[in-house]
Image 1 (cartoon, one colour):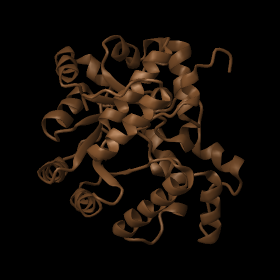
Image 2 (spheres, rainbow, N blue to C red):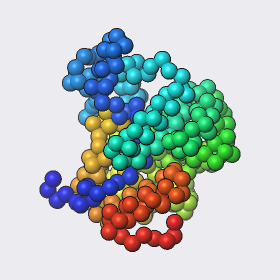
Image 3 (tube, rainbow, N blue to C red):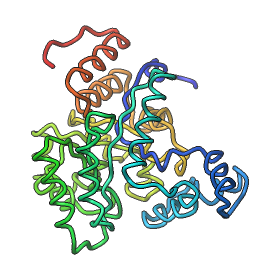
Length: 312
């Protein structure tokens, strides 16, 4: 790519990518055929016509995309078996490809009955690949049983389990306030609407709250203005906030980490130094145990030609 920055070839840290939104279409078709589940298409190209898209849709329409292929993937396994097998796969991937990957278990806003089990699984597998709990789903859905999510997060806090929350993606800034004050989130997934509340925004800047930004995703879900020069990432960058870029759901968005980096470079004017700092921020805000976090930072500092800071 013309004008390509060296950072595109260097190690990077991605904090916000969904496993169920990262499955290869070939894998989906394989298991649909194996389990004799009929999908809307039986070819990669046909499946992608129903699952992936390149022009903005509503957030509800985006969520509906999962319904087109998840029946082929969601097998007859218990939640415990799912976590155990995913962990096994991540360990094998780290061994074979030298890429460190850890999992975060998601509660779903529209399924509050799941939350208690999710936090128990986080507790059981906290030393076996699982590093945190999350809350995802449509923020605009009125959830009368929010107390179930709060109870799960209270248990996570009590047990020392890390916490992130999808908030302020399509919901108002009050959802971010809820995530911070009630759920005690340590990171915010997306968080774009935070900027609509100057008091909250300053508070989170002062707390060094980490924002997991996904520019291409925010365009396709209509979460942000279609003009990338006005994306919240620009203000966060200008204010030297704590943030990073991620691909979110590669299968559905046709996204890659490099695609989001290219958008940030082309339309937002991100420099090599800003990309490097962003990755250092991501590493410092990741949920790895402290020893592993320091190892990760060492690797980045070495790759970026920097001297390791002693303030870790």
